[in-house]
Image 1 (cartoon, helix red, strand yellow):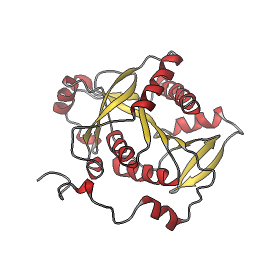
Image 2 (image 1 turned 60 degrees about the vertical axis):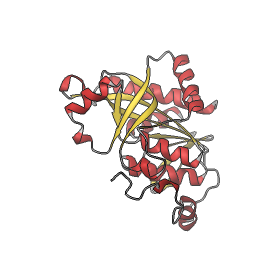
Image 3 (image 1 turned 180 degrees about the vertical axis):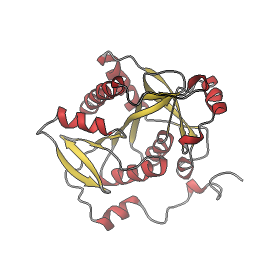
Image 4 (image 1 turned 30 degrees about the horizontal axis):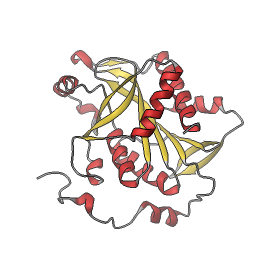
Amino acid sequence: MGFPKLKNKHLFEALFTPDEFVKYKKWDKKNFPSKIIITYDKKTIEHFKRKFKGKYKIIKIAGNPLLLHKNIGIIYPFGIGSPFAATLLEELIAMGGKEFINMGTAGGLVENGIFLCNKALRDEGTSHHYIADGIYSYPNKELTNKLKKYLIKSGLNFTVGPTWTIDAPYRETKKEVVHYRKKGILTVEMEASAIFAVAKLRGVKIASVFVVSDVLGNKKWNPQFHKLDLTKNLNKVLDVVIDCLLNF
């Protein structure tokens, strides 16, 4: 039997909605940004604070601090993985978010670098509750192309390609890495395919860009989390993401 267990589940009406939950919680939508950056690296938040020192304010959404500068917000979720990211994205949309860029670290199946995602392999459970069963989910083309232009303009070296989204990082097997490398998949992470599916269902725009933090090639794990270049690249990518959203 496939997943979800109830066939065509994605076609059925939900019992309650994110909008109803926001109303129940009495969260204030006033001055909520329409353009939001979701990041999973705390150092990225610190760079945002330095960049806009004295020019940002902090609001709370679902217990997570959202830093606001002009009409751009950036949020560092207190959690990881597709269910958490999808739930947060639902609530950000219900609050008024319309354009999102998801950025953070990812495992590299081939090499280090910066990677702009053009599709995500759905090896997680969450996306299948939102859209019809399929191998990939996709980001918004318009926003992804806009981000690509700004990455080119910045002079950063980057590669466009697919990612593999998985729920179980400690079950990324050697066989899978070899298999997906042969299919041209460049990175692995835990959120992209799910949040692409949420964005598609809710009619909002989303793009995603990653900086590799650990390489899984050659059947051996090579962690790079401690490298200064990782933080530098994340900060550079954040600068590009902000410019892109300010001009989108």
